Image (cartoon, rainbow, N blue to C red; front, side, top):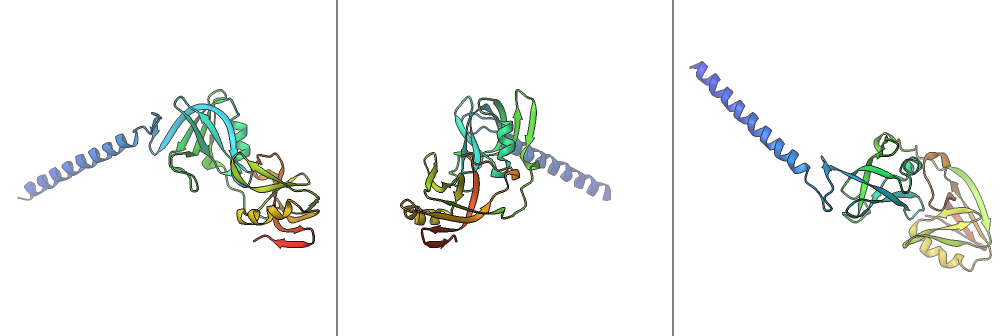
Length: 229
């Protein structure tokens, strides 16, 4: 009797194993479906081959994306700003590359409009760049700095609202709500004094303007001092 029980148990285990295998197979097939534009999937990631058209930046002026021209359409691909120095040296404008991306748009971007970069392969140089292996810089304020000028010029990036301005050859970055409040006051100012911190240029960030970025702690417009909050 015990032999029959053992045989039945073995049969149940074999059937269960077959069902689990079929379920995993269906999931694998589903994972390799294509997204709009017939771009092939690699698991949850998408592989896109195309030419780098141009780079874009965030509201603070940091380069954090590039536009890739694939066979189907032009696609914006986002990457962390601290990786910009490596990415721009690897994915040169007009070069052919293969990008592995997450088709889910990163936070703050409209769904389906921007992909997140995970891996780069240079078709011409036959070299690779794994984004997961680039460490984020340790949080730090940077170098304390004081700059003064008689004229501030708002610096805008494409059609995006600007929250930076140029003063004495530096790009000063403000929180968006402070930029809206202070830009009208600075446009007619005779004297502007900024105290803040200039970011370490060795950390991997790149400014779209090519200027050093200063995070303002306070701004004196003529005789009135405004704390940046």
